[in-house]
Image 1 (cartoon, rainbow, N blue to C red):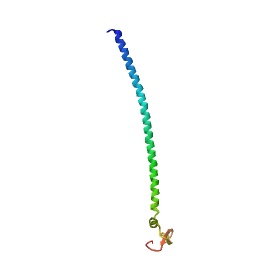
Image 2: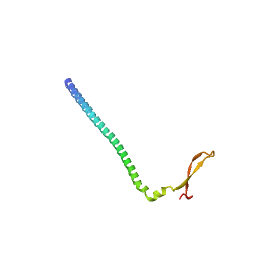
Image 3: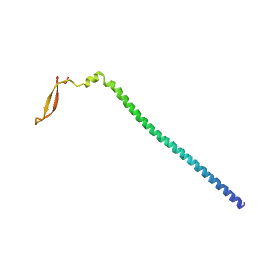
Image 4: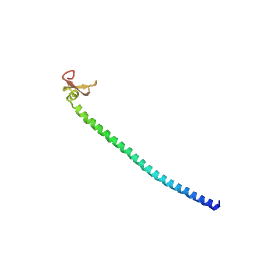
Length: 112
């Protein structure tokens, strides 16, 4: 085999290796760009899901409040929570005779 033939093969293989490296680098750059775009989409999806969950939580809270309004406005609940009527107040003083406040007086001792 001649030297020229070997040099020619070496040159051809070097060119093929260089082309492979160029193609691989270009493909890697394309894959990297696609990966970064997919990662950005995934990050935005996580943010959107968190915002949607926050909105859902707010709606559930409003729904619970609205549902409890009718329950809490029934006659039995209102009557149970109502304070009895007072017939007057009595002055409350401390040991020095200073007024510290007033206590309500109820008609019956069982507060009915």
